Image (cartoon, rainbow, N blue to C red; front, side, top):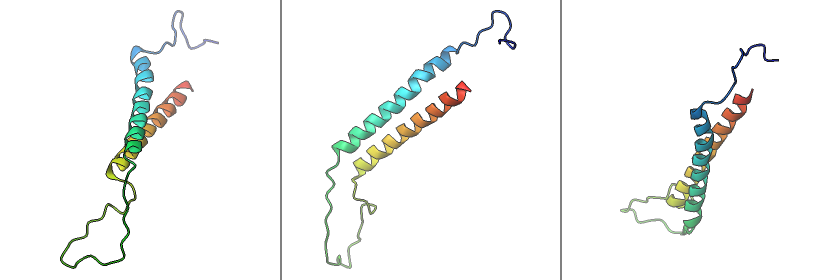
Length: 98
């Protein structure tokens, strides 16, 4: 027990690791919460169905074929980025323990 440690040597985390251990998950959590709030507040996308062909001299521009508004898509994207940050941080934290 302690064969690799010299007298007085301790495995203490460095201050930068302590800071990232707090800041990174907080940033990920804030990103998830902001994304959820943005997506939740912009859920009023209107969908219209029509059964007629548009006029031939007009260009039809769709909304990316999605039933979500641009703001809702942005909120979901922000939440996904936050979840990726949290997953990456959790993987590093588990890997650092071994």
